[in-house]
Amino acid sequence: MAAWAIGLAVTRRAPGPMFTAGVIWAFLVVGATGLLGLVVAIGEHPPRDGLHVVYGLLGAATLPGAFFVASGRTERQRALVWAIAGIVMAILVLRLFQTGG
Image (cartoon, rainbow, N blue to C red):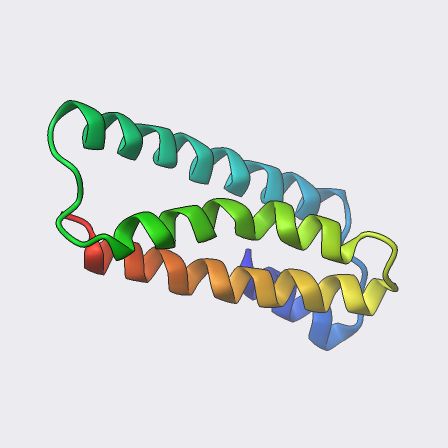
């Protein structure tokens, strides 16, 4: 998603329906993963690093936040917002892998 959004921003193209569908799938995957992590934290053991929870909450808020920031913007600005959100999401997912456990 991040690479696609960066490509859209560089080429000054508007995010189309395929991109929107990709964002929806990404949101569903992040949500399902978050719920699974919550079940594991409650059922087995919480993560060793408290930052894991912070990164998870930020990751869950990134895509909805980008949606609200991008609404009402020009096509190029929407692509740029999604590119930034994709990069932030990739960084948060990497940090989640590093702090999980």
